[in-house]
Image (cartoon, rainbow, N blue to C red; front, side, top):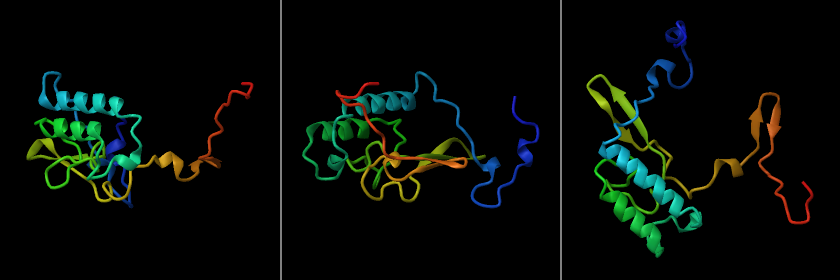
Length: 147
């Protein structure tokens, strides 16, 4: 059950909380669900590919095969450039916008999502957590370490 006063919440900066909708998951036998599964399988297969190779004009056969397969999926709603998935748009973010006239939603690529290389936001800067900061540098275990 939701908060009965949740509809009264207002944000003076950015989106109003009432504008944000979490869409229902696609039907199990839908083209959209199949496209999501194919994308996740490709993410697993390509996990060892350096982010520097995720650029248009790459010679990586696996990246090119992934973009070709994803382009053939009618239910794919991820980021595209000029209507096609390319190595530089593969696995980039997208958002669904809903209105009363379109209950399925409209997939769009938010501004800035395709700018620059793909990097982890956790590698950029320290993270504020209440009154503390969590450092972005992670001390990894080495064979000589005793944990």
